[in-house]
Image 1: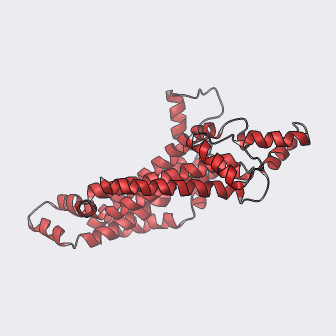
Image 2 (image 1 turned 90 degrees about the vertical axis):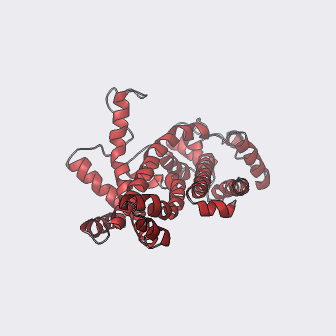
Length: 333
């Protein structure tokens, strides 16, 4: 417990550092957000902004000409109060409203795909290590490695063309059916539509990332099978299945646990390409729009969510390490 409390203090310090970097990165970008917003309004034919109204817009968006250190402490104060500002790219919505709408789509799609990829890859890694040298090992491993070597966007476009355009089995974009009288909400028709639109991007993520988990588990498990405690378990006459899962796989999975914690942190960051290719709603697409329009509030909000997710995932991975490995638990106790 004392170790976990120390680690929690470290993660709080890391979160503060992440928030500071998140504040600085958008302000290092060239251009003026207010000028970009005014140019957007005028390009849409919504009138001309008077020069004396520009300062009022800056105050409304929190983009005053105060010194950088003053803006920094104002930003930290607003974050601590749960105020991330106004989303300039989706005015007049607040950043919290934009993230509150987009985040469930990203977590539902990419988060579920990451969990499926880890689970299937780890189980298949155990299988091919158990059956190493057989046709399962010599066939499954290179096939999945081939798919993982294909650039993600090419694999996604190929599946869109094959399953969506040619065979017309699956929809090719959006998060749900936008045509017709479909009612958004927790009703069977809408849920079915969401699942149909999410299957193709989720399948692409799983296929392209599963080989990494399989290869890591296979190599670690083959090494673990030569350990003395595994040989002792076999000498006791335990079944091969129990030796494989209760002794070998339980210890071999520890490096994958660390990798899975890292991958959960990259779930939100990796959603950008997925959502652009499939025109899928989520914070990745919101970040793309925010960078285009120099929307500091949304950029800071997305990066802050990424940092919190990464740190929380690593903390959970450390807790899992302590629970799964008695050696780590005794050493850190």
